[in-house]
Structures are given as C-alpha cells and as structure tokens.
Length: 103
Image (tube, rainbow, N blue to C red; front, side):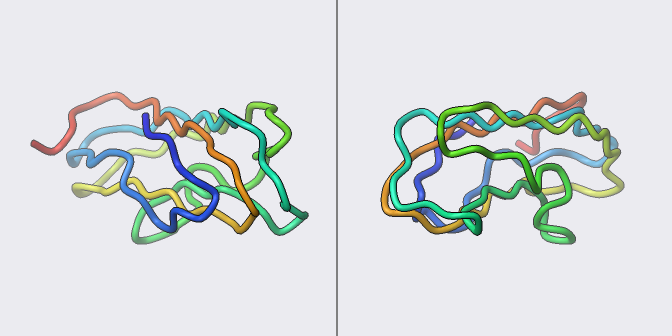
C-alpha cells in the first residue's frame, strides 16, 4: 500500500508481473481533506486505463471505498494512483492481488 497526498499527482503503487490478477482496491482517507468538491477523486489503474481498478467511490470525509473487479494481467503492469484536487488531505491506497511483483 501507499499513502498519497491530495496534490501528489500520479504515483506508482506496485509493479505486477504478467499472469497476476488484481483482486480489488481499498482507498481510505487517513486524515481530514479540506477544500474538496464533487470533482475530487482518487483513481487507481494502469497505463492503459488510469481508472481501471478504482474510479468512483472515494469519500474524502474518511469513508472507505473498495472495488472488487478482478482483472488478469497479460503483461507486466504498473499500478498507478491519480489524485484529484483539494486543499489538503491524504489517503492510503491498497491493491489486493494474486501473483508476483516485478523485482
């Protein structure tokens, strides 16, 4: 897992090998978010689709979001996080997977 900031831009969470399966994603606010609005969001995906694993459901008020869509990887994949805009805030992003990390 990785902690992301409200203004951290795209960040790598994990690099997974071909044949791995993303089982789900959990995004949990770890402190108070300020200045957010309905366009503030955290997306989790890869270079082919930046919101493939987690697109909607992040609640900056501290609620937990989760996506359980499974996705098998045909090639080595970098899992990325892209944050929306807000004045302050952090969240922990955890990717649940079966398989191996790229070493």
